[in-house]
Image (cartoon, rainbow, N blue to C red; front, side, top):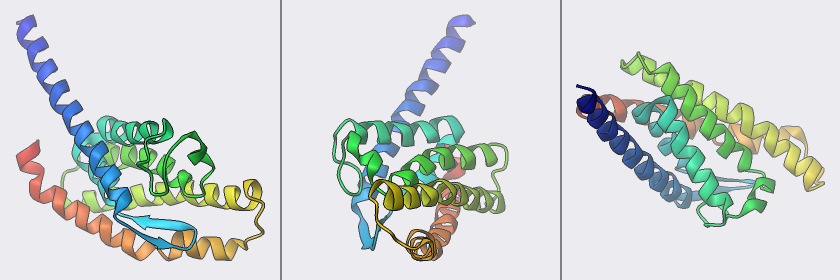
Length: 186
C-alpha cells in the first residue's frame, strides 16, 4: 500500500516536473517572439506564463516562471533583451517578477474553479498582478537607476496602456485554450 502511494507520487512528480520544463522552454521561446514598443519589448511570454498557472497550478506554474528567471539570470540569453545577473537593472525585469507571482495567483484562483469564466477572471487577475509589479519597477529603474527624467504619464502609456489591449486578448485566448484541453490534461 505504502509503495503504491510512493510510486503514484513519484509518477505525479515526474509528470509535473516534465511539464514545468516544457513551460520553461515555452516561456523562453515566447520571449523571442517579440515586437519592440519603446521601453518595453512586447512578447508572447505572458500567454505562456498565464498558461503555466492555468494548466500547472499555483505551485508548478510559478516554479516554471521562477526557473525561467533563474536560468536567465545565470547568463543564458533567454530574456527578451539577453540574460545575466545585470538583467535585474533592465526596465522590463519587474514584469518577469510579476509573471512568477501572477502564475501563482491564476493557479490559485482557478485551482477549484475550472469553468471558463473563472479562468478568464484568474487570467485577468494575473495580468493585474504583473502590471502592479512591473510598472512601478519600470518607473524606478528608468527614473532612478538610469537617471532618465521620463514623465510618469509617458511610462504608464508605454508600460501599460499600449500593451493592455493585447494582454486582455491573451487572457481570453489562454483561458479558452485551457478550457478546451483541461479534460485531457487533468
